[in-house]
Length: 68
Image 1 (cartoon, one colour):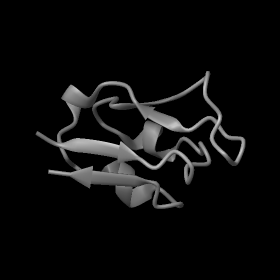
Image 2: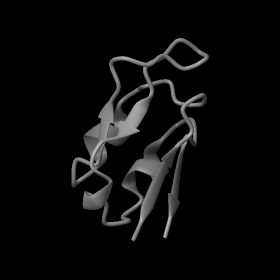
Image 3: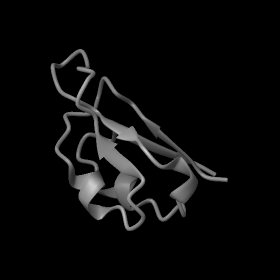
Image 4: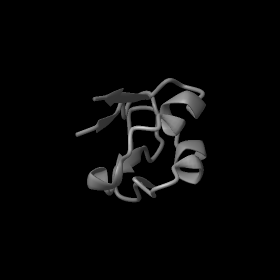
């Protein structure tokens, strides 16, 4: 099983990973601010992850780690 880890304090909530995920695994949070004042992305549907790494490769802040 693939595990998606979001480094919340690094994420600036640009949304690139959310838009590029082919399975809709990620979603923006609306109730939790990180230390930078952004709403970080959350792993909403971890069971849907296929390990394609689209999210991690497109994140400009390198805030996503994929573990297989």
